[in-house]
Length: 149
Image 1 (cartoon, rainbow, N blue to C red):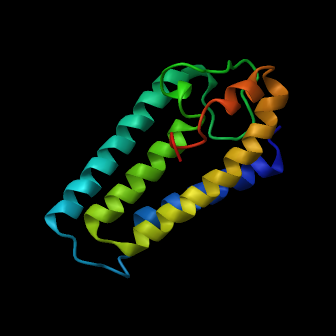
Image 2 (image 1 turned 180 degrees about the vertical axis):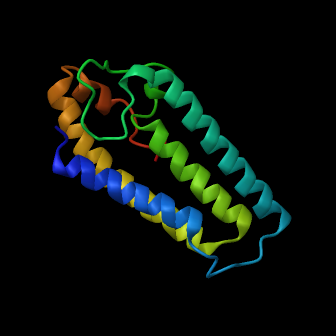
């Protein structure tokens, strides 16, 4: 049985993804060549981070904040540096494409995703600490989303 907060966080996340994809361009701005290259690099890096993190977490992957019953704590690969690399990749990819497209609406939604992922990960981490004995120690030596931030 899923917890109400799990469903709420995933529902908001899906709504933001839907807005990101289907929202018309309301605030378009010109992007020079450097901005386009930066946006492309951010988007591509984000996609690469997502794919790598999904592969590394495999059996423990769930869209919900509650941990998988038979999952295990992954602390290697990207997870050695970042506790939530999938969220990090989504933020980078969304912001990067928003910059590349010169679409302020997409950048605003990217910021909303970052805010959502902050609160979702905070809730998730309280459950992970209760589920995994060494999560507190692991979280003290890793970054939530981006190393050095």
